[in-house]
Image 1: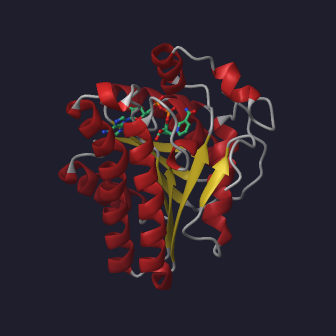
Image 2: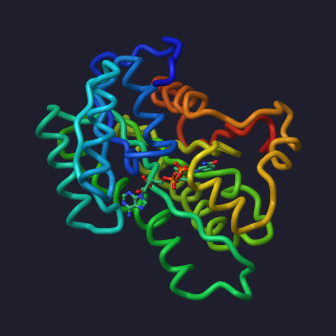
Length: 256
Ligand SMILES: NC(=O)c1ccc[n+]([C@@H]2O[C@H](COP(=O)([O-])OP(=O)(O)OC[C@H]3O[C@@H](n4cnc5c(N)ncnc54)[C@H](O)[C@@H]3O)[C@@H](O)[C@H]2O)c1
């Protein structure tokens, strides 16, 4: 288990993280849990969710788990309801579930495009809608942080469907922030550059490029860690005065 310095106090904060059985979501759950939050691990496969929950619990994190497909309206509604009932509310939703597709636009088939937009953009929309409806219904404050990407601010070759899906997340974040600001609901996004996960392995494999070359273009010459991303999520959640932002956590690649 990675050690996380105690930098945020999230005691009594209840957090649902989508796509958190592995990778970045799993690491974010671990960090937020170490900072005192109760975390809900929600992902596609039951067995992967149970394994992640067991590991987190043995590391001292207050974790619970459930199966979730962010592209399925019924599954999304059930996850928010179950988490809310079990924990007595939800303070933070982290929209982390995502898929990557790689390839020039001219050779991208419609199925790949649809799947990428469906998980990354529609999935985030369905989760945001369910969380906002519940917060408004209960008249509670809360926040949402979505995983966008530097690909949500800059298009690069071979990344058209992924980039389109992440630009959608940034646009939705800005619009929703303006809609629910008066309900005391914050809506933000974070934009990582390179975090070494299965997704980055796939990108390296399919693009034929090297992660070290992308890292060499950063001001800070190392990959980001899940702890780096979790720190930014905790900061946005606790700030109470930042909303509609898409914060670059990319080692200094983009400055807008
Ligand atoms: N790794 C990076 O460098 C990087 C950079 C920028 C943004 N991101 C974003 O961070 C997020 C996490 O990325 P990662 O690198 O951990 O990817 P990953 O592929 O390692 O993990 C993605 C997780 O999402 C889950 N998932 C996929 N479809 C789902 C669905 N329909 N419902 C629920 N869960 C689903 C998977 O089961 C998996 O656990 C993604 O949104 C990704 O776009 C990652």
